[in-house]
Image (tube, rainbow, N blue to C red):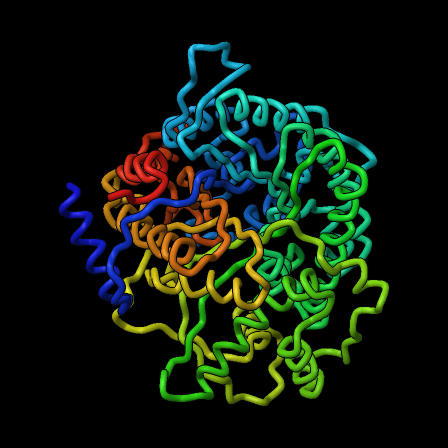
Length: 511
């Protein structure tokens, strides 16, 4: 079995063009390992116990459904009812072993044991507003957090993972700055309720993607304008900053936790390595992809490339002229992070876009490419996954981690999503996923040990096969299979769970 995995690993790295040898070494003491999930993707219980509707509850009930297989997350993995089983799987993969002491008082962890999950805003606040708090939602997350901690697993909690309460979408979603107030109220509630046990908070999952993909899915089907997209970025930045200061002033003194945000982090490189214009396109794409969120939070303003992008779009009549952050806003947003989260899935080749025409109604892909001002492609020899846009390029992971170190002064980085997209018919012997994680974790090890990148956490995406938005249940990222034809949603660990269990236990790849 291991011979097959090593052969697969060699194929993946050769296709990547990576010449470096495999590094046998371990991560620093205290490095944290874990797995992740998203609330709508795993919980189910879409109308149970007073939960309100969110945008996905509406969108994935439309006919036709945005999901290619016509499915939805009404039940998903049923983690709302089966969270104890999920925690048992986390404990197994994380190598958590209790001493012969009372379970509540002492445990030993082999350099492992975090679970990154997200809160369903509408399960806790059915209208999205603070006017009514759903006690069943509070109870569910209290039970989950308590059971994680009782089993030696540290929760990393994402406050908002795209599933906006439906009533808030009805007032314009993230293009309406009224959401700053509502999100701050929600954050205050969850800090107060869960913060005595949660020590790492993520305000938003991929805020750069929330906006670039038109707030993910608009319920009423209206085309998203670029003005709304740019407004979304400002709203999310100010919301994050407001929540960071709330935690810093009110909760940090007695809870002692950290607050960050979590960004999509693709690697871009020039299509033609001998063409400086392609290299410039790659750097611009990186600067804009991160500069729309991270630069304001780190430096207090949009970086040069992002400002130039806005000026270019305004000259083409695609957006209104944009104002800089005021001095008061810059003072509010600068330095509002304790760590930066990284979600990395793929690498792309870039070349400058040539079109200067004014398009009509924009598709989500067009919005993405207009903002980055590039055309994207891939090398034909890169290994494919079951998600068409994601290719296996392990070296890109090391490169994006180093780029963030260089651009933002080596901040603490928490890798909160990294995973391989397979298909259900590939079964439990997921050799490609095993090879993927060995290759990508080894590139992260090189970044940490050879390059000095400050990575402190790595969470695999994902614990379970789960609902994957517009791809429905046709693809999976889980290291644990879920039988979606079984009402009991039976869970079965895959080969990748066994492999990761060993990596977690070894804290890397010792000789």
